Length: 85
Image 1 (cartoon, rainbow, N blue to C red):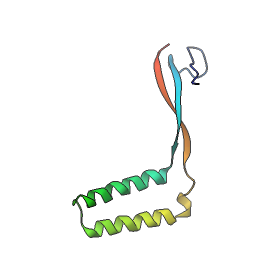
Image 2: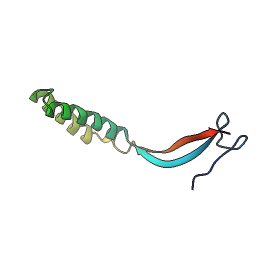
Image 3: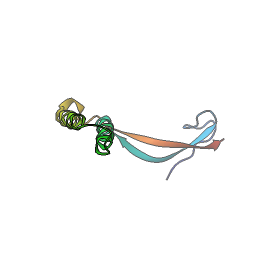
Image 4: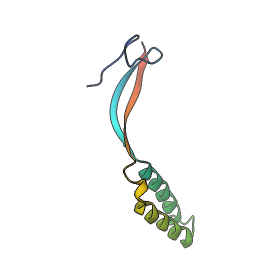
C-alpha cells in the first residue's frame, strides 16, 4: 500500500503529499537501443537507405557486446503528487 505523508512528515515536499505508485526499472542501454530501434523503423518505412539500416544494426551489435554498458540499470520509485497538504 502506498503511504501518504502530510505537512511536517517525512516525504512531504513543499506541502504536497506524495504517494508511491510503483517501482520502475530504467536501463540506459535499453533506452539507447530503443532510440536505435526508432531509426530502424524510420528506415523500414522508407525514410532511409540500406546503409543507414546496416550501420544501425552494427551499432546495436557493438552496444550489446560492450561489457561496460551491462548492468547499469536502476530501480526507481515513481511518485505522484496527491495535492496540497
